[in-house]
Image 1 (tube, rainbow, N blue to C red):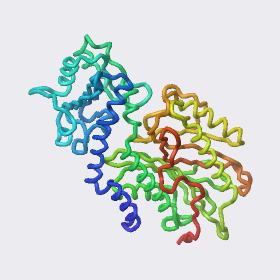
Image 2: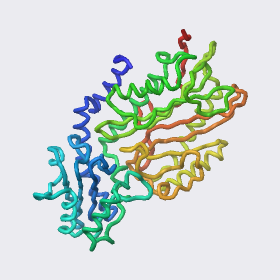
Image 3: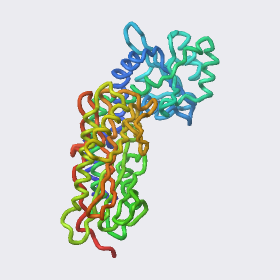
Image 4: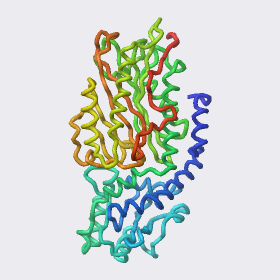
Length: 438
């Protein structure tokens, strides 16, 4: 990707404090400080957690650690251990870190280590000193990022604290609240990242890069990857580019040359190297045939139905409602309006498939998801509003065609807001005037 093609994207990221990388690191440290001071005490109080332990060995980090380390200490060295102790009367939380450290870490955490201590012995000593009623640790049957405590370390902790073995509890609820609670700064950054993600889609889905009969969906995937990499960010999956074609019953065709008349689809997400926030978006584009002046009306109506389904889903977002309940109500409403809906919305944040309530799972449309689907909606959670609808397109001889859509949104407790400045996709990206193959 040439420099001129992404210069305007870099400017947006610089304005938000996400570039250059040094500024992004400083921004990430601000996020961590805010969350430790304003999110953690409330999360521990809400879950009645007296002590939270996050501990791991080098090269086997607990996923939660990426949200606790400062930018100058991104990974565990030897044994790294965080211990958070809550004072029930004041609500204050003392923050301890044991292990090889850095100036940034020393500014945010107390250093409890004595001469000869390692991270594990520090944890044991702190538990014995403060005598918390319960000890939350990284175990979970529902979320991988809440299940980061290794079996070996858990066994060593329980052996050393044998008299407290029954007081060890899963830190899943605490970890989920910690991860899904967005600060104002994080939300501002999510808006910028979402807008840049949309800009990348529009940049790659253009006559600048697509030649019918020559350019493949794989070529476009790599262009997206190159663009994200050139900006200094990472693609946390894919990106994936596929298409639907008249006369071909496959609903997602990969590794194919783009032809005139195709309906293009992409699934793309990016994340920062230090500001660990993830986007996730799916948009559609139509490749004009010779002589066409607008996309087939059937596609426009299909996208309109997809937008209506988005509205329906968002209308059922209520604080305290379960993901399963939102799924059941939204899909029932869509079916009553004559749609063939599929809903698989998930939280966004540090992880692309993030912490919080799941609202359906792709292709498994029973709507009853044990654990993850039972979690309740909270204010300040970001979601990937992911879904699809299908219909038979008259212009394609009645062929069943899908509108796969996904937008990054935020639920503020009362309403759902699209994070991109341009809102959501309400019209197809139109690929006209494309160059003929050589």
